[in-house]
Image (cartoon, rainbow, N blue to C red; front, top):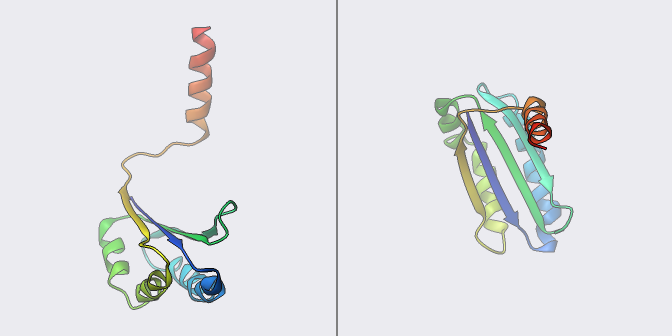
Length: 112
């Protein structure tokens, strides 16, 4: 699985415009074959920060998305940023959920 994260710090006057471009991108990306999830978040502590996340089931789907016309909209918003965006692409080989918390807490109880 591939997880992408782009953190954008935007000038206050560009936030509304950036959201208008990115919201439809999120919705259309969710329908692309190979997309596991896509989301856009506004940082609650820093009003000028947007976080764009997407997760892909495989490398080929992710690469096709990076080359797509729709992805160019993200580049347009990145150009609005007041500093270089933080861009991360992580390859995930394993995931877990609630069972990891239960296991960790059970291990802690057994030690004490």
